[in-house]
Length: 135
Image (cartoon, rainbow, N blue to C red; front, top):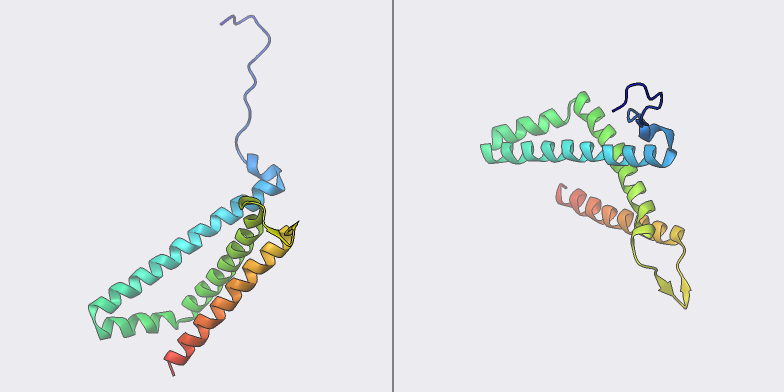
């Protein structure tokens, strides 16, 4: 390389590249919510382990879930899951083949709304069944 050449090769700065574009910011936040999903999976695995250890361990785990720290943690998890689901359903129309109904293409907003409605309905059914099983 000639050191007397005043031209330097272009080096693109990489730090924070995704913060410059709102699309990438939303994408990174969406992907970061996967960490919350993993955290909740660990909570459930600990519960399964405590169940295998016996009634006393299981009851201790249930008592730990009733603590204020756990309730705040689960509130944060619920918000992260809701955001993750919402962004997932917003992406869904872009990732699936065109849906034709009555000779017309279904609007992306309708697909998103149907996905959210189906998830809400299924969640309510599971909640009602779980609530009835504990009574």
